[in-house]
Amino acid sequence: MNNKRNESDQLSAQYHAVCPWWLCFTFDNVFRRLLQNPERILKPYIKPGWTVLDVGPGMGYFTIPLAKLAGKTGKVIAADIQQQMLDGIYRKAVNWGVQDRIKLNRSMPESIGINEPIDFCLAFWMVHEVPDRVKFLGEISSNLKQGGLLLIVEPKLHVSRDNFNNTLEIAKKAGLSVVAQPGIFVSNSALLKK
Image (cartoon, rainbow, N blue to C red):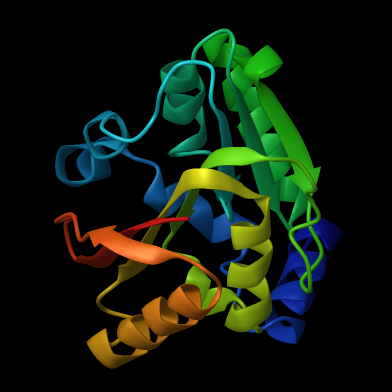
């Protein structure tokens, strides 16, 4: 086993149930696009020029479409605890010619580590991996501009409806309110506003 994979496996085991980088290729394929089309899911919420946070972005399945939607004057912060994920996003961004719109941020398990106002945050299939949801959602809320949006999407196979509702209660205590629950394939989802 190579060192990068071993390091990632240790990180995953040490910090909750983080999806290892070498498994993420399974989430980025043509079949998923048929069921969870990033542009269709995100377009209603993103405006050109916005600053967007894609937290726990994996290999960038949503990051590249977010960069396109934010446009030339917008910015996407891709924040992940695994450097291999960020490296994969950079390669994709170069291929798509949007690398100047994407800021890579190596997070720590206990903090996203950004300190700038954001208009929109995407947390897609990753909140269940966070060891401290109270701190996590509080950090997102503190960076969201007034009126900013957070889209939380969790997989129904891993996260029960009760667990998802508990996450929404934590988000409400962090100053966010649920404004919609969009239908996303095999997922529980909520759009929240500050």
